[in-house]
Image 1 (cartoon, rainbow, N blue to C red):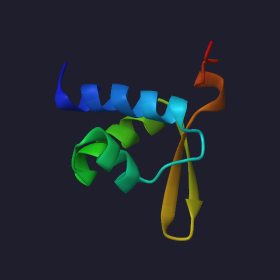
Image 2: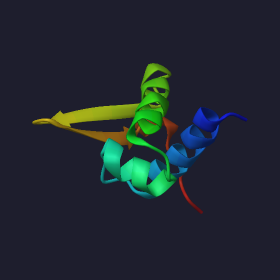
Image 3: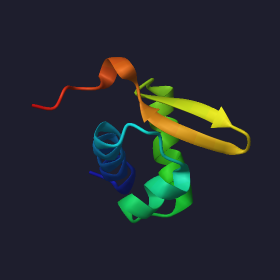
Length: 73
């Protein structure tokens, strides 16, 4: 698996656990990658319709798509 694929899996897990919406910088910090790498992973997830993005001013909050969330046991 490449760096982007690993980052995508980490992001999906983070967004599954934290439903409040996270910025690119917050996700980059939690996945230990640069903002650029994180942004590329988020673009792939958005393109696959796995995440939703909410724009608030100049900030984008990223959420796991509602139909993609799995209930935790």
